[in-house]
Image 1 (cartoon, rainbow, N blue to C red):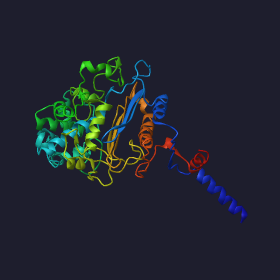
Image 2 (cartoon, rainbow, N blue to C red):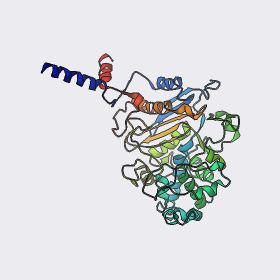
Image 3 (cartoon, rainbow, N blue to C red):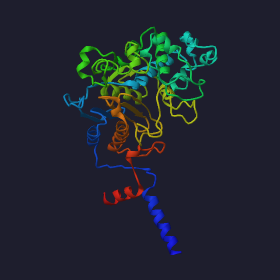
Image 4 (tube, rainbow, N blue to C red):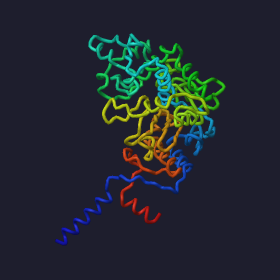
Amino acid sequence: MQKAIFIFIIAIVLWIITFPKLIYFQDNSQDIKSTLEMAVSDSAFPGGVLIAGNKDKILINETVGFHTYSKEKITKMNDIFDLASVTKVISTTSATMKLYESGLLNLDDKVVKYIPQFAINSKKQTGKRDEVTIKHLLTHTSGLPPFRPFYTMESPLDSIFSTPLDTIPGENYVYSDIGIIILGKIIEKISNLTLAEFVEKNIFQPLKMNSTFYNPPKNKLERIVPTEYSKDEGKFIKGRVHDGNANCLNGIAGHAGLFSSANDLAVFSQMMLNNGTLNDIKIFNEETIKLFTKKANIIEDNSRCLGWDSPEGESSGGLYVSPESYGHTGFTGTSIWIDPTNNLFVILLTNAVHPDRSYKYPKYFEWRQLIHSKAYETLNITKRNWDCKSKKRWKVSIIQWLFYKTIG
């Protein structure tokens, strides 16, 4: 009997030591600046800017590292970054919201209403394609595939419009650049402006976001952080969009192409937290923001809102971002999360694809989550969102956690 009890106790101890690591290692002795410096030392990215604040003021304002690993140019607060897929929300979703408010676009409108050639693919798919709506594009449930290298094709735009569906619209979630490219073209068709002109006129200029644009002007080049090394060009990409498909569309696309600074994105975030108005400048109605930033529920248990995403799983927004939060990330190393419940936004801009995209995996993703979490901890906002879980690197066993708490 004693032997059985001993074996049972040993088994329990071993289970605790090897217990699935479910507790986030919260080290309040580590400040946000040190966390950013550790990320750079770990080669998660050569440099970056972190800004966080509420609807009224900036609360965290940090820079770290350099433009490149050669350490020739220090990162500054007003540096301009290639936002990559953050373009989808700051530009394309915002433009859609404006057209929706103006009554020029309905979320249930069919794509073929604006892009007739979208229906032309094959007899087998004609009916399905006719059913794809604006809402499907915004929620990545259109049935379109994630990506195709249109920059290698003779007629990129024709190829985009004729891309075959992989699934029936509304049945599956597949994150698709192609759908948002098409949405950008719909915005241009309705407004009679390029997407760049529309968002400049209706979003960026009213908010005085003077460092936000497609195709950056040459006089801004010194402030632009380079992205990946281009073998074709024999140099690092700087001053033009990193994304190949956006580049072949003259740098202006729904899914990528926008450049911006942390300060400008902070202004945008404050406008959103203030229910669409900032400094007496009204951009959106409060009801429109609520509609576009809540879960769309096209697919059951899916995190997508209209254009935006909501936090779940190993969220880039960290562990304390509230369930009502909305955000997005970009391939180049950018992330933005806006949290109305906690009256907070957190923006991290880096060039994690430098010198090439392999440097991102897995370190950038690990540090991104930790930095967003650390921003909350810095501001003493530590109510866990249990729909979110830590990256494996930041989990500790119960026995490690107890040891830390005992000696800490």
